[in-house]
Image (tube, rainbow, N blue to C red; front, side):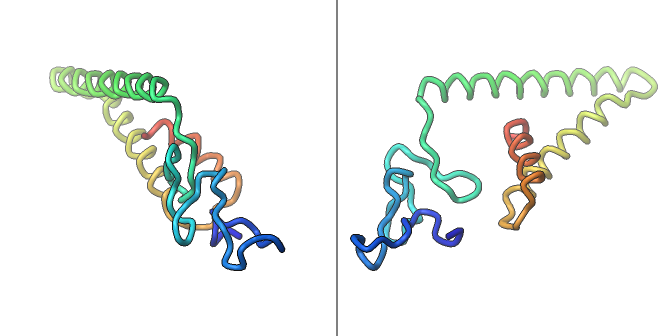
Length: 128
């Protein structure tokens, strides 16, 4: 069942070759493509596309926070050059690398426990 995410279970009235779960967004010859209005997710599943206005708002909020973080890191680095020693910019870099590595590990196709998958999903939003 995990190998064929988009294929419906065989039913006596179905085509013996199977059919795609179109109501869940799957299409194509082996149900690996996403239908119109659906997009592939990190785990190779099809998710319904959000409202375009909501998508733009989300992107603007994320861009704002990225810009804010870059400005903060640049200012802290410039201030650290004038001071004797600043550990804050080092901690921010470590935190940024941590989120990037967690997202990278989540994208690997391994069998993670449910607790680890929950951790990955929460970190995915922060690091994207």
